[in-house]
Length: 393
Image (tube, rainbow, N blue to C red; front, side, top):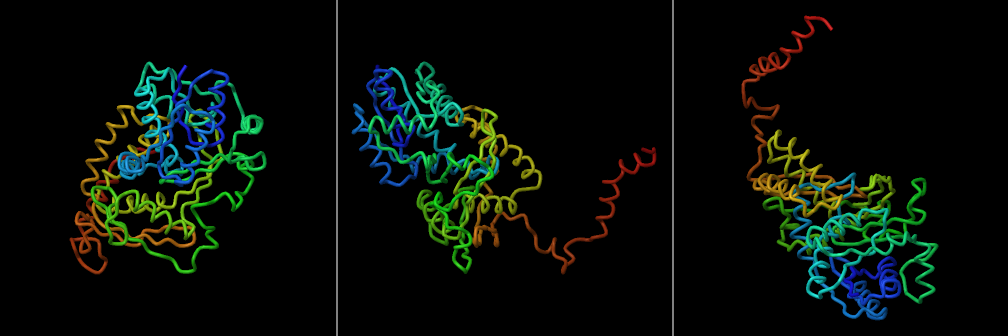
C-alpha cells in the first residue's frame, strides 16, 4: 500500500510515519507545507521524513495562498470563534487541499494525517478530503489506535524517533502566519497559569516597551494593503505587524473553547497581527457601513466563523456567505490607526472616503438639523408601548 501523509515533523506525524510503515506495511509519501512557520522547522521536518524512510518528500510554500485565499477572507468576515482568530483552523485547509493534490498525482491508495480523535483538526482534514476526493481512503493512526501523548512519546523514544516534546513538557504547538496555539500538559488544567516559557510571538505585557506605539493600516476593499504608509504584500505586512504588536504584548488569548465534538478545552493562543488587523478592520466598518448592514453582517460573521472552525471551508454555504461579505467590503476603504500598549490594541483614528460620519450633523456645537423634529420620531417609537400600558399589564 502507498500512503500520502501530511507531515509536520511534530510528535503525532512522526509517530504516524513509523506506524504506517510497520502496522500498515505502507510506503509513505510525506507532504509538508509552509503557512508561516519558522523555515528551520520545515527544513528539519524534511530531514526527519527522509531519515524515517519516506519514499518521497514534498515541501511547499503556501504562505501567499494562505494569506490571499484564506486570511484575507477571514479579515473581511471578522473571523473569530470564541475569542480565537481561527489561525489554526484556517491553516488546515490549504494543507489538506495540497495533500489531496499530491495523493492524486502520486496515485496513492490512501491519505493519512496525525489528528487525534478528540480535536478539531480531524473534522477539517477529513471533510476537506471527502469533498475534494470522495473515494479516497483516510487513515488516522492516532485516532484509530486510540493513542495518547504519553504512549506516543514512549513509542518515539523506543523507536529512536527524534521529537520536540517530553513527558515534562508535552505541549502541542501549532504555528502559522495568523497565530500560534499552545495546548496540552499542565495547560489542560484551567487553574494553572501559563508559564512564560510557552510564549514566542509575544512579550509579557509587563515587559513591553514603556512608550506605546501607533501603527497605521491602509485598507482597500476590506483587505490590508499598507502598513505605516508603505504598501506591503499580505505575508510581509502580517509578519511585520506580528513583530510590532508582539513586542508590546498584544495578542495573548487564554480561553475555554468549545470544540467541534462538544468538549470544553483550555486553549492558549498568540495572535498579535490578527488581533490588531481584526480590530482595525472592524473599526473601519463601523465608519462606512450602515447600522442595518453591521447588524446583519454580525450574524453572518458568527455563522461563517462556526463553519470554518468545524471543518466546512469548502461547503457551499461558506461561499454563499462570502458573496454577501464581499459586497459589503467594496466601501471598506481607508486608514485606521491602532495604538499598541502593554497588551492592549486600541483604535484611535479612522478615515475613509466612504465615511458615513457627518461632523455637522452629529456635533453638539453646530445645528446640523432641526432638533425639534426628533420629538415626533420618539413619540411614534413609543406608540405601541403606550397603548399596551393603557390596557394594563
